[in-house]
Image 1 (tube, rainbow, N blue to C red):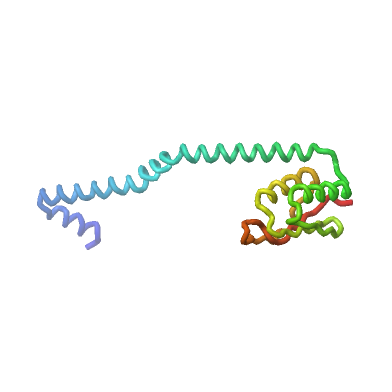
Image 2: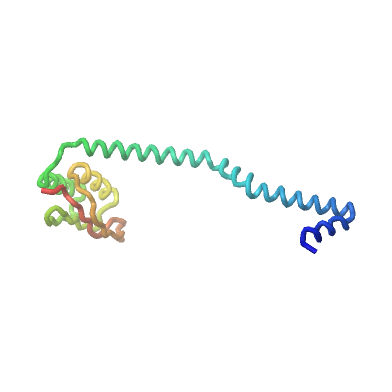
Length: 160
């Protein structure tokens, strides 16, 4: 006897009350399955959609600001190597003071930091990118006990 035939015969052999209970259990299992597979995940997405929408809007605004900044940088006139080096060294003196020193090798500048405050370094990096058109190539930084940064930062200047 095949499995469907045995199940059908077993079903016929059940009392009406047992059939009602088995049918009820099957309905409960089916409803639970539909909830877990179809309705539950959809409601979870619906609950989090507003916060995800706000996050995506913030990311889009940030991307647009970066795009605007990139266009502004592209629109600036070309700058030579010597001008970039001069602007970079001025920025080091003004922003980082005695916590940093530079070493120049061709179109690469190595900045050695010793306890440089994080805010000063962030401001200097933005200024170096904008005014000197220097791009960071390598960074080996560690947090100093004073809360500043120690290490080296290698920047690439525009070619000669």
